[in-house]
Amino acid sequence: MKLLPDFGRCRLLVAGDVMLDRYWFGDVNRISPEAPVPVVQVRREENRPGGAANVARNIAALGGHVRLLSVVGNDEAADALESVLVKESVHASLRRDPELNTTVKLRVIGQRQQLLRIDFEQAPSHEVLQSKLGEFEERIGEVDVVVLSDYGKGGLTHVARMIEICRDHKKPVLVDPKGSDYSRYHGATLITPNRAEFREVAGRWANEQDLTHRAQALRKSLDLDALIVTRSEEGMSLYTAAGAKHEATQAREVFDVSGAGDTVIGALALMMAAGAELPQAMHIANRAAGIVVGKLGTATVSREELLADLKAHP
Image 1 (cartoon, rainbow, N blue to C red):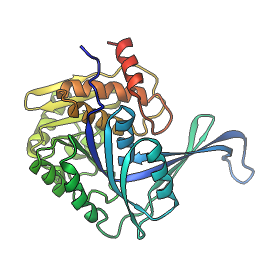
Image 2: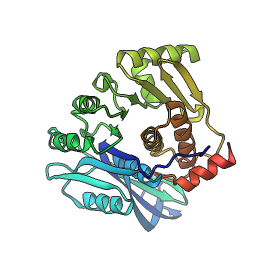
Image 3: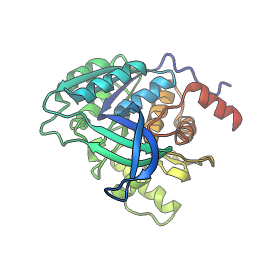
């Protein structure tokens, strides 16, 4: 039996909020005379796709074909984001909106330690993805699975309509949710909140049985096929009409959890596009996330890395 299916024929559509993750790497040799803070001598700069763009990047890194739909500003950050997406083999359709500023998250790294993060973002003053709905519906017929990546930046204002379009075309739709109102995700195939996000919606749970009860209640109320709660060092839990299934995480050094959720939903979507059942898809997504948290910043895992991990730890 093959450890991984062939992703080369899998075609996915990713829509949602994109951002540019910018890294400044440098050396720290002294404390500033102006304030008790380290002085970083920047030696290298690096740009990486963030948000929905990182989901698409993860899918491409594993060998899938992916198209990204989103809206960006008409600025230097958008130019930089489009440039790195081309290098990552992501087919991006990014609408330039001069009324927006592209979201940028700048991280300052000294001696492989994140010292500071600076966010450049603005709340949109209008519905930024309205113009993309037509293209979204046009592309639906070309793909196997759809991913909607919600970072609360306004790119998924019309998420309910997008889920409806996916259902009308009988396409599985996976959602990485945001905020406390999940009613807008009603009818999705699968949503993937992390532990903190799920707690915000469902409340605190007393034990595993209570968690299962709350998860199943939420799944039924939203008419979802499945719900996966990513639980950091506790692994992942899958809830379907057939019951609950837990996937423990492997003990390994965690360097940076940035973007791990993007890796999870990207790997899940790829596995589903390849015809895998949800428990197997979760298993592979869990292993992919375990690899990526051992890397600095928003990162990806390659098919070769994932295969090596699966062979080393069957």
